[in-house]
Figure 1: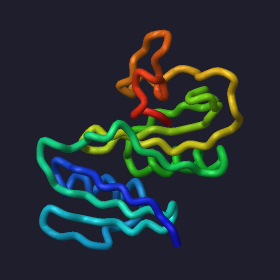
Figure 2: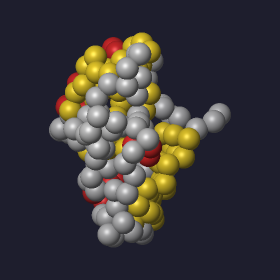
Figure 3: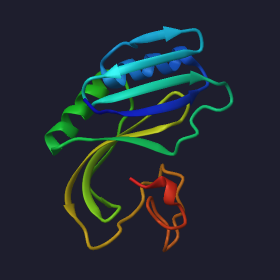
Figure 4: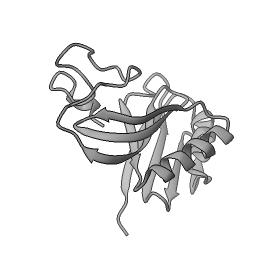
Length: 151
């Protein structure tokens, strides 16, 4: 089995554990002072949290790609049911693709998207306003001006 690993700095470990338990529907596999990790089966992911006050939320955004709009909509319903505020973008164009996606924001301000690619696009599209990406003519979530904010 292969899975991606993401290591995040978090300001408050308990707040982060609460959020990620809700987001992924599972409890941590290991929880120690200042440290937690989740072994998530679906999507295959190893998420590592380091309590590092003042350094939390340093990644622009993180994402989970799913294979259908139905799964995006199911996640919208599930996350809303967990009491998490969702920002939905249905039929949006970003990064030369038409996508359905939902965003949630973690306790340290980190952005997460659950998305599916519906089709390729001839145009770049527009950046979501909540990503700290330039909004000029050449800007956007995958622009040369902001390459680390790519979808």
